[in-house]
Length: 185
Figure 1 (tube, rainbow, N blue to C red):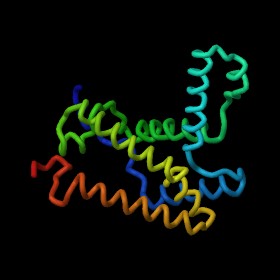
Figure 2: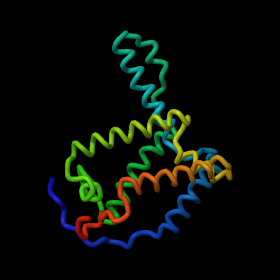
Figure 3: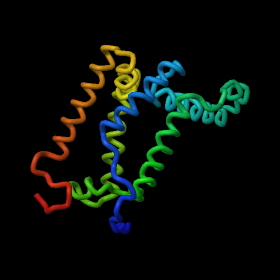
């Protein structure tokens, strides 16, 4: 895969305080006006049910069972698609969009192998999935939506998720590990 030449950004990056404040405002508006929470876990449960019923319908030819499933857009599906569209739009607006098999930070720390990245990505995703299923939901959804309604579990869940991220980052990228391309450690 060819490396793209770095081009100057078309706009300065957003302040993390502004982005965080806008996220909080969007969460609050959703909770207050739409009576909805942020999160995509219910979408994946719904998608899994759709796939399972498709397989069931094909295998047993039970068209009446499949016919009972209503496949239509819902709040969580809209949110899941919005995450992808919003991320792509932000990357395009800041001239930061590129296709990569292996992110630069990973390449500098663990090498250029796409297969190795995919295997570890799958393992990490599986572990995260098991944690989400054991907790009956996603910690980011619990944290963000819970903090908006001032739920103690939301604050505790978000703090635990943040702490887990810091611990994992310090294991994968220990102090002294150069991931910015200024030389090898």
